[in-house]
Image (cartoon, rainbow, N blue to C red; front, side):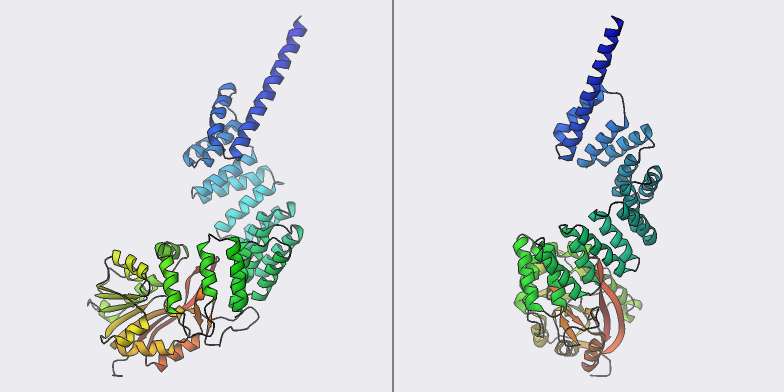
Length: 495
């Protein structure tokens, strides 16, 4: 009798264990599927039926993360780690959470502990390597991620992270080899192909970028990003008709993408034209006005800060005097003017082709006057002279600067300053300089200018150099956009 009771108890315990395991697997599946509303009551039931465990706390943390409840997730993971301090997976999960919360030091400690607890886990090594990238320790990152890739050679995210570490550490050739090897192992993973194309674009290896994009098209896995990057490379090489075709293909695959739509329009600008057509610029910025400033901030746009820095060194401002009136050419939303609005400047007149951009500028209540129109036409008709003229990120819509600078010079007071920026014209990876050697139409309908040409055009127009600096204008595709920041003066004795 006692043996029968014992056997029955054992059977019941096994059944309960199986039921509990099935319930936990069901909860995990619901969380993975994003069905938190169904998972939460089941999790509550599981906690009533079972004693506290690291697994239950881990599930609760995952559910909280899905719902964006970071504080709840932190508490649950702390409890889970306390209950099972030797569980590497819990450390990885908490490292991810701490990174999301901005605690890089804590995240790194957890990831390192996960590697110590399970030295054969590629996920732990990849997590630690990713954090090393965030901390700028690219050699350590490459070491960790290299081990992760060796253990899991077909894992695309591991390879992308390793290539990022290698490129950031100054070895783009090895980074490209890492990605190309991954493409050979997993030819249907488009993310690896796009990462390799992007790396080539950043390194100005435009021919290789086009070849990689063509290979992706041939195997039938190219997406909108593939064609968009291919268009960038073709445009940078001056192959504008082909670039237009690539952008059109990108738009077919991403018809709702405003950025791709802009690229299609930009690619149709005539490469030999001396400037971007006014109608094109107006259309682009009317459609761009509402997100203009947030986009520039996200790109790390630096020109307004550089203008402010230069003006703080102006003799009038350093002497405690006001400087004005001021003419802001291509003022846009007033982004640059806002950066200098606390300086003793004004009144400020803004000029722009885009009515929607001017509406945003008016809302800032910085400008005494706003004029909708073409800046070249305004300069020709204007009879006022200005001691300060600004042109932040405007000359990039002009190829030839000679006429423009010649039109600005007579509208300046003797001793007046002109402050502007341009994107720098650089040679490709193979040494070829695109365009005519002085300027070239690049992607997104903007022109880039050669250092020597800018200086020659300024001198020919009668200006004297005050400041001429190589600067990063902003970031694109995770790479700095090189540019020139220039301050010119109309000499006092040239009138």
